[in-house]
Each structure stands twice: as structure tokens, then as C-alpha cells.
Length: 263
Image: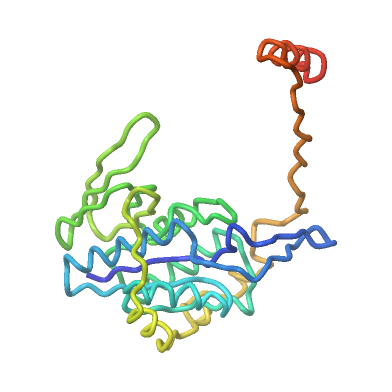
């Protein structure tokens, strides 16, 4: 079974992010990790291989050469191969174009099963996986909490709905997006880390996948960043005075009526 896992390198949740003076770009502290939801996709691929020993796991990301760090993390966890779709000469973050590039890679490599995270925690788009499936004309099930590969032609997946869950059977090839609760991603062993450090990770020019550059460069994007704006600052905390709980309640009610106008 050929399994492809699409991942993304994102800024660490504790990284400092500043809006540049032009308000159209960001200055991000040099702290990056594999996207949180993608870790579940990598782990699930490895568990499938543990069941189907002849499986081949290929992990891929679209990004700069720095994203190789995230690919090495996946290798350390236990995937077989890793590829970087180098965006050095493209610099395009349009989800539709990224989906087109990823689907072209999948067509070139061949696949039975594709896994990726439900969404990236930096842009929160949650649409690349579904668009890849559309470009490949294959079934897509999002935000799965359980995946059972019955054989090389059929899978059963469980996903979460508002107020319940649904169980779906799908024919392979198919694409699934993963979320927290599907599994517990493993911590790489030292042997895996050593293997990842020595691994040669090819960088692929997306235009070598049969895509015309004019269709995926910056001018082809349907999205234009007008400006980045910081979130509104939180109002200062107000301490409610009073000698007794009753007095504090009275002061709180008064503040809600006269200051916050909430009552």
C-alpha cells in the first residue's frame, strides 16, 4: 500500500510574531515545528504500515528549504521517504494553488491512501485536504477520529459531527484529514533521530510536476493580503472591592450596570 502524508511546517505557538511596517507581511521568530494536526496523520500512517508490512510511507511538504526540519521529524517518527516541494521561486500561499501542487505530486508518485492534518494552525484554512481530493477526483473524509483499513480496497472511518459521530465506508484511493483524538503521536527514538539526520531529502521544483509556472506563481493567486491587523488589546482587569462577599456582589452588580452597561 502506498501512503502519502502531506505536512506543513508552522511557527511554534510560542514564537513571537510581529506585523511589519508595510502591514502586508509578518516578522516571525525562528521557532518552527510540524503542524499539530499533521502529527496525527504521520502517526496513523505508521500504524497502518505496522499492520500492512509492505506499505510505503511518503511524506511531503510545500515550503522553503527550512521546512526540511519538519520532514526530518517525520522520518524520525518512522516514515520511509520525504520530499520537499520547494517554493523558493514561487512564494505563493494560496490554498488552491498549494492543493494543485500537492495533487500533482500525488499523481506523479502514485498512492492508495492520503493523510493530512485537518487544518494548519497558522492560517486555519482547513481546506487544502478537501481541494487535493477534488483535484484527484477521490473520496474525502475530514476530521477523522478513527480509521480502519479493512484491505487494500476498503476503509472504514469515524468522524465527529455536532452532537454525535458518523461511520463511513470508503473505497480506496481516498483522502482523510486527521485531528486530535485519532491517536497519540509517538516520540521518536534516538535511532530514528539519527536516521533522520543522515537522510537525503530531495527538493523538487513544482514546475517539474507538469504544472505551468504561470498557473502557480504569485500572479495566479486569487487571494490578496490587504493588511494584517493586531487583535484588540484586552481591557485592564478590575478588582471588585468589599469587606464581605455580599459587599463584593453589590459592587460587581453596580459595575456591570453603570460601567459595563451589561445589565
